[in-house]
Image (tube, rainbow, N blue to C red; front, side):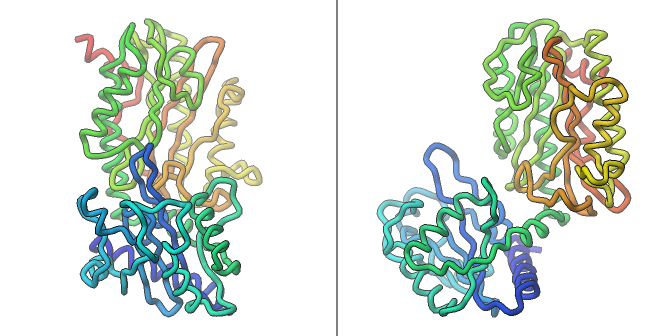
Length: 424
């Protein structure tokens, strides 16, 4: 199925679900894109991308309950042609390509070539006027506005700004519906995820071959990110390259240490390809060989991962304190407790993976066919400067979990050989 045709199908699924769940309500579905920020490369809000395929900033999509779709764009597109390669234009041709009924301007001309969250009111006057007609006096605005301290923060901020300008305050959150849709991956999504994993595996290999005594963590970071960028991908999250004591810090991203003989190095990285994310971790010995103690702990982490991967299937939970016998997180902690290491595993066993690294998904529901998750046990012993994490990405099918990153070695011998390659 062509790209935008798939987005159209997803929108129809969303529309049907909204009408089914809220049959008594009239209104429209309104979705907001991200804005551009000069300190970082633009990345579209994941749910907006999932439902539209649009990678332009500051766009707004309105879906009438009768199915009509209108994409609103900031009124600076002619100016954007001077700065960007292929901006969306207000034309029937663009509407047809994007599988929407109409492309319109949000309102009056905005200065420069982009819109900002704190815009002048005339810049959104057309959208507000159309929504006033669409919603009437008692219509509901269905949008992504969960009661969350972090989710859809920019979109909720824009919503409040528009409400200050007269937009209805009758809002119905539909983020749970979208989350359920996004959680189950189709084959196109699995292919994109597999490509992201494949690139991340190459980056891990580049990292292993850059490791050595006296080498800066930043040099390893540069080597692996060169591979990601050269593969026409981008980093999915700040790369973690932590050696020695830094290996025991879960989200260490300074990467400013110097590796020493005898250290372990945790490399937790991910490529984002076509908006889909990988998340893989390997732990390497700087010397090219684990000590006996490091090998003991490493093999225990690996056995934990293998044990949990065998159990991962539909009907199990990632984490469920009320059903510990079916909770992968609780089973992993119990496994390590029996070995005397429960206190050295402070984080969860894994998370959902997709358009976001920590993707949408309801942890109160059991795993289902179509989920993609990470399985990432770890043991961190600060007093010994031993930090070990092994993380792979798994696709849940009706028969169990398929490892998407199986091509990246993780047994002790293979890990040592990966590091020793550069010595040879």
